[in-house]
Image (tube, rainbow, N blue to C red; front, top):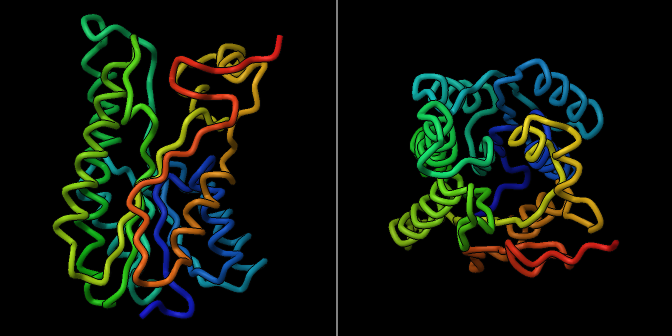
Length: 255
């Protein structure tokens, strides 16, 4: 049975989709464990949401590329809040636009270690707590890049394709247990994503020029909605795009 105040753990919660998800779940009565490499930001956010909504919070450093860091954060979160029910494996990134033949090992490893291995580490560390609670919901933040491919984004697309397959396999493995699993796969969403990828603010703004992109709260709302549905309902996958985006190559831009 769904608890009155689920305890939700969110990685990559310092900004963007992770921060927006923390805000919307706190407003809906969830207690929160917020993790990120920028620990000071999640600590400030946790304090703000606790004061605003009266929910219990825990915040700390986590690097999902590191198994010890991930397990320590999950264990400390569960100890501080008395368990876990919801996990939003949000930490992820794209880095640069490179041809497969030219991408540096440091760059492709960063994306694979974070986008794929980071989710495995997070779920492995959290699963015992969800089973102990007898109720749970796992979320991944995928991408339309997990359904399509585009040039100069081969490794990023590969990471999101891998994540999609991972989620599909895990959904089968969890069948019969009281744990739901949802992948939220956005299209163009204006956060720090493009700034991190392109390492140039002007180039990042140009990605969304002339069209109306999604914003972080749009993705967070999908998570809130899936979480609050009746217990017999599992939303396996949500592909969410701006109205102005029909595919990775088809975007309507006003001149």
